[in-house]
Image (cartoon, rainbow, N blue to C red; front, side, top):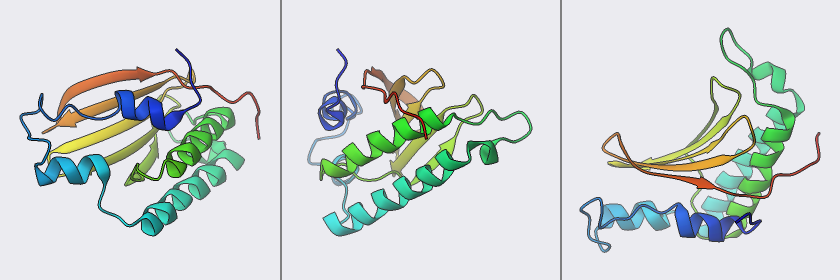
Length: 153
């Protein structure tokens, strides 16, 4: 199913199953990770910083190229901008701590807290995957079927 409700897709697929990880749902580390600890204003400011960085990259994606590293396309970066904007508006999803291009022309949104880490990967073909790691071990990998923008910068 393809959806443009990013929040619903991530709530359905992108949250780690804390029982599977051996954590109680009330366990502070799991609660902080799943819901975040930042105030809404601080969370929104961080999302705005992420979106501004992505827009800068979309204007000149060739600046991201390096030896052996393929730059993401403007279309892919704009797709990440639209996803970031939708995630910001859910008012419950914390912003990534790091946004970085991949070696294969994709993008990563990464966030972590203690032993838990989440990675939203935008692949070169425009698809997305949500990966959850516990103590550096992949415990969940789910493709997200999100509507991709057809416009370019």
